[in-house]
Image 1 (tube, rainbow, N blue to C red):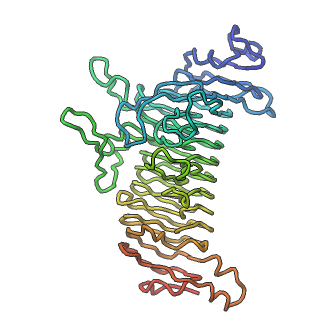
Image 2: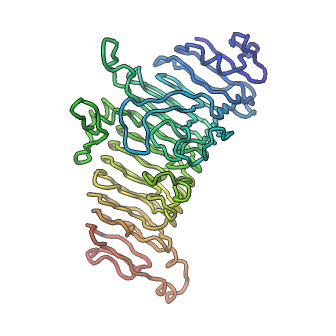
Length: 500
């Protein structure tokens, strides 16, 4: 077990790096090492590693992880890795992963890359990856802009990657591609590829996946496209029953069945023991926090502000495909729990963003949102996204001044919304009416129009009451035992309604 010290201001690459007095000067010296259980890599606080990147190699052990962090004056700023487009590697899922514009291979610039590293902990670093010049001749919103990451965690050739901890990282100004979702493109991305060799005598039969991933106490600001994303995988072709052609090649078409996902499927091919907690994500170009292809992930005590910064029709112009982003949500997870999170001011539902909600139960099985708070989100409070989002529950949440529609049920079969309080802006209906084509049981909630309770006199409150559509065409909504304030009447079947 060794400790390696790195200081851009005091170090020298002729040193051995094994003490503060003999620190390395550059991160390249660390990249050349083969790290093992119990090894530590410490960067000096107050130092900046400009145009450098950290791509270490090796793995720790269950009781002896590799740790990467900081040393020096505790009052000095965290050591800053400013990649500025360096650290380019070739990402390749080796399988189709979805439609245009989301490519599955290509060059990526990553400031901190943990590739096939198990039992590793990274904490107390500042990380950025700015676009500092335009010598490629591309505008920032061109489709061919290179993908960039602050931190990328990749499972590829080592089977199950266990115990990756990212803690107290400040990741900011990652100028990635504004369109590309599923490459390592954003603040923090945790992704699984197919192994490099899948046929022949040297084939690796192990399934590349994650177990025990935690991202906690991080601050992620101005990253594109994603803020934090965990769990996207090339093995979706197995999870989602990808079709094959007559030669056995995947066709990039999938069968989601009835939307349900077996535990053993995600235990085999997906991510397990995932927790994303106590993070702040601000000004993400697209979505703030998403967990994907995970079994029982826990996403709690996070804050999103002003997500979907670039998801608007006058910026997201190279294609209209996937011009959608929400704040905090799952994709193809089983029994995901989102609790005690806050989402503020998700942007641009009024400028071409097809989503814009705080929360989105999306193509998952058994998603629960409980005890969360939202405010000012342009596309509403919560979406239950289409027929493959099943057994979704929204309970005990508070929404204040969200816009457009509190509850969004496009083609959803069984949304259950109960025990929530919705304080509605004037432009917010209880249902998002432009696509209320699904089914929902909506019971024991408070629907209160803010303008109706802001007046003191009874006659002024009466003047502010408005009509809404409780049963839009194509919907199957049951209202039961709700409180309605500021509306003309209530749903006719809600015989336990209280209204004023």
